[in-house]
Length: 138
Picture 1 (cartoon, rainbow, N blue to C red):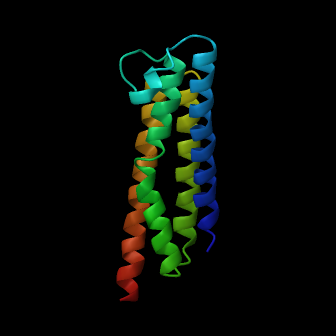
Picture 2 (cartoon, helix red, strand yellow; picture 1 turned 90 degrees about the horizontal axis):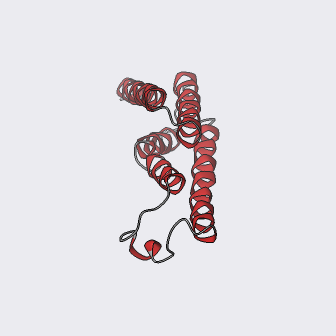
Picture 3 (cartoon, helix red, strand yellow; picture 1 turned 120 degrees about the vertical axis):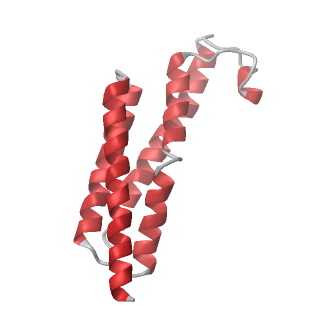
């Protein structure tokens, strides 16, 4: 079940970005960039751009990737050994890492869109391959 490794790498990325969200919020308060009361309901004040970027990236890692996690769990539960799915899983995870790197550094929206779109296409192909395998086993 080698799909567990790309799943774990994406989990690690999500934790790294999640911890970075917390750190960016603490830094924003310490530097006086935002009133601490903002974080009670996330309203009433404007958070600095760097805080918003980390928060938005974290949200991105909890949106489309859920379909990747579901696929991974199905592959494991159904004992499917597919080099194609595993290879595509690594491509998906790599594109998500690149997407996060772009988002959290120079933040070129066109480059982010390319990574996001490609990762979505890769994920769709993974699902199609999973359906093909399952239908052949039936």
